[in-house]
Image (spheres, rainbow, N blue to C red):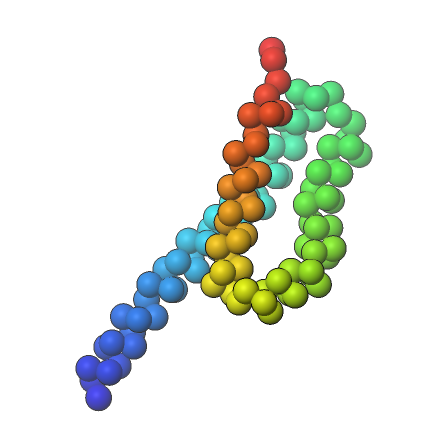
Amino acid sequence: MDHVSTQTKRNNLIPLIIIGILYFVFGFATWINGALIPILKTSSQLSDFVSYLITFAFYISYFVTTLPSSRILEKIEFKNGMILGLLVMAVGVSNLHIYKTER
């Protein structure tokens, strides 16, 4: 009985670590928006209202994409959904060079 319990703990440890890392990655992506708003405001000469539209757009996306995302997760399941989320973030980050500003 003890062997089965130890094996179950080992089987659950890796997914738990992966979920923890993903939680950190998605949390960091959310946090970095707040840290970048003053920089974007200064470099792009944005008003307060326009600069905080960035935060609004980020959080309204959760509301707008909830139903479509749930339909996708029903079809591809949660594990593949996490992979898809990371791929979407990677595509977004890979296109950041387009927004480079000259000083």
